[in-house]
Length: 288
Image (cartoon, rainbow, N blue to C red; front, side):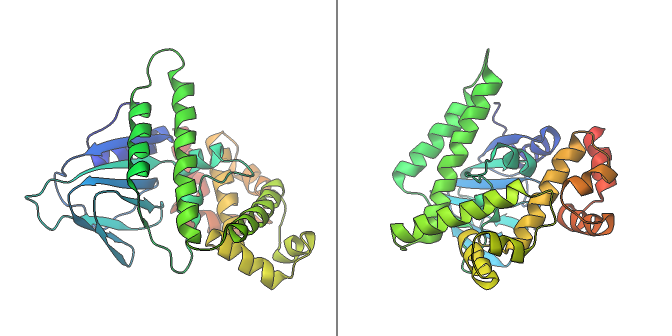
């Protein structure tokens, strides 16, 4: 994969290819205002100091800082001293592509969907993690020749597993290994059930009954394990499935039922709220 040298080119390439892109940045031609884009983003600092604004949070950026920004979060980098160069990598990922390479037991969207109350977008990587991060960047940029596309996708999936494990460890902090295993196992089972039944009109009561849990405990458990509510998670998965189907040529009228929505009106409202455009417009853009 070609490593780009412009932040905006990285965004454009990700959006156009519906894949992922990498940008190696040493400076910016100008300071971007608060913005969001239709790609998830990892931002990894190699050198220099600056301030990162993400929604209503303000972070100090030091070498080794890794930031995770989803496609709905507004953000802006402020370089306080322009005489000091800052080097970083920005990785942009299409949400639908990331969902497509996830499995029922391995949710690679976790970095971008896990948003608990005390969530921090910033993780300070240790020296070993920093070296491994750069290892994957170099490996992705070195792929060429026969089999390049398959090897590239394989390396990227391995890279995402590495980053997701770091995020999970940071999320649970000092909790015991037994606690982590319980939450990971139980929430993974719930997510698997949701994925298997995403085309059905799922309800909290139905899911709770399936796992012999009370509805209130199910909601607390799921929020603790994922950082989002179970209804929000179901809606997000439905919309991501709808995006994939619309990009594959299915009609709007076919898609909403295939994604578990009872009627077009609810589908239209949910889709437009999440993506910013109507299902019909999304389908037209995808097929143009």
